[in-house]
Image (cartoon, rainbow, N blue to C red):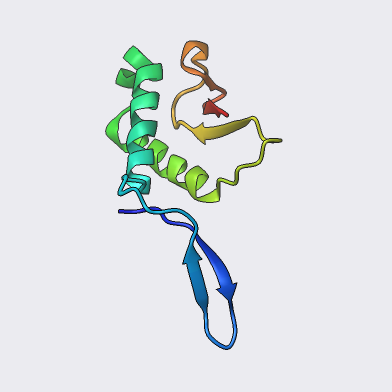
Length: 104
């Protein structure tokens, strides 16, 4: 996968674009974001992962997907919250009131 940006030079009568920067060939797909979230979540949850069955963990992943899709880089929003079913508060893991906090 490549991530490449283009400048629109002309829209009508036909689209003409120019590459802003050469593609590097780095992997940028959302699967890598998912993997990094999984590592972060499991690391911060530590032994508390044992309190989360597979069905509820799948809900965490789905809840993260919803947050990821809606993400907009808004500096005024310092935190993002992912609901963790069946978990109340685990301050050391960053879970408050059943929500896993990710800060900017």
